[in-house]
Length: 281
Image (spheres, rainbow, N blue to C red):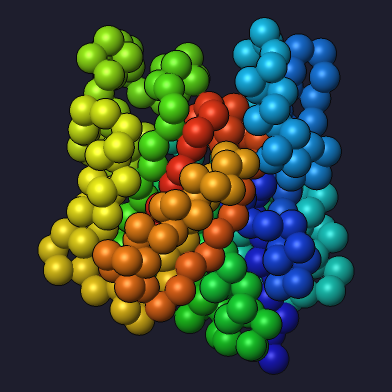
């Protein structure tokens, strides 16, 4: 039976303990506060990061995974596994995918599949988790790869942030969207289209945001009764519990998976981030 190793990067925001349990190799990006650098999910927790973010005058920056880091991870995995499936964050937002491809090409005799998720955070993290479960169950590699591609096509992402400043400064949304939102107190509901963050709806006032997100999830008669809904948050457990309870009342999903947003996603989204991820029918 072919032994398959699942590899991803840290912006998948998979809880560290779960990644270890499922034998997922997570290669970290890096967040920088001035002259101090931290490996995402390894050197700094979500709570520590958001505390620093809100209490520091320094705007954090981030850096992608290098080809060398991926090559080292691939070589290590190939000591015990026959093949590798690597899923990365969107190539439209980071050079991390390209780094993985460079590492793949440097190991041309190895069986390595690199997949561009065109997604962010737990949106593709939850798909990585299912892929790892399939690998542990000795499922065929092509079956796992097909599952990943099919799930990514049907992935829906909705998220909100307290302020659009971080997304604007990081170049993740355009200036006009940020200015309108800040001036008019309009709260945009953001999503991901073609690998980029885009506004997909808007409401006036923060109290209407969660109902709007639920409305979007329910669009087109979506039935969540046999599905998990995945949530991510920026170290705000009370807020995510409120979101969970609202979704449970209105949509009645099979269950929830909840994670925190790591430092790299947090550096671009800013405080108060809440994300909802679903796989549509």
